Image 1 (cartoon, rainbow, N blue to C red):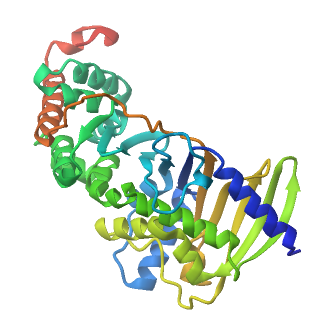
Image 2: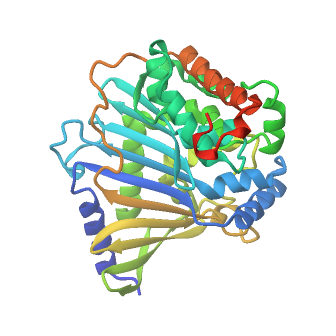
Length: 377
């Protein structure tokens, strides 16, 4: 039953979420590979877009996106800041628990972190012996020549300073390094359907840059706030169990689309970038009511669930978008390293090619098979 008390609870839950110096937002699709594939096929039929592949569905089903925003001085609660105030920001994109790319903007500096696990998975084409290959990759990256120290740090999971105006060059460097073994590049593209995890993120790197702008983060925060508090929405309790309460939020489809803000824009942009069917449809009627489910844990707004199929119409299969919310920083907003030199994209390419060459030489070594497995070079 709808009550003014439900609205007051939601307002208080949002205030509690913003009661610390930073907020973390986690985004993922709550669907299986088959469910994502079904949704993409319907989207392609509805919009006349390209037919999806199973590989695209696998990537999306395992996609995990994290954003952290906070007060640069780390002494003001988020709810005490005002729209337009500066924010420190960190982003991470991962697949199935493995971070692929991390980005930070701390003050005037931008940092990047590359997940070696996903680079190895793509560079070595997902072969069964990837565990040992990943160990060798990390060891060899750590022993790269001193002239490639910054690239070595990046490839062993450390944060390094980058030039945001050179994002396309970093993306090309990662792509060139992943497919740079030459002879196997075409075969790798066939095996992965042209869509590898690290390759995906490399191509999408420049697309994530708008989310590093404080105004984009404030846009998301204010739209979320408006959706929960403003007239035109309805709230009703779905029940409480222990310290967890769920509420159904009803609002016009146009307002829901606006509330997703930069996130919806990023999903659209990346679908277009990779030639995939649209993930977020434009509602046929912006006034059509749609629903989201808010989860409050111990009085704090902790999750928002929204089925993107509501934008597509009654014939669309479900595609739940799960948005987790937490007070505090899941990714540190501190500067990773003082007085660090900027990463050169060319060094990144050379380092990846060097590592690919070392692995290729190892595979071709006729004496390698005569040594016990754990001590094979």
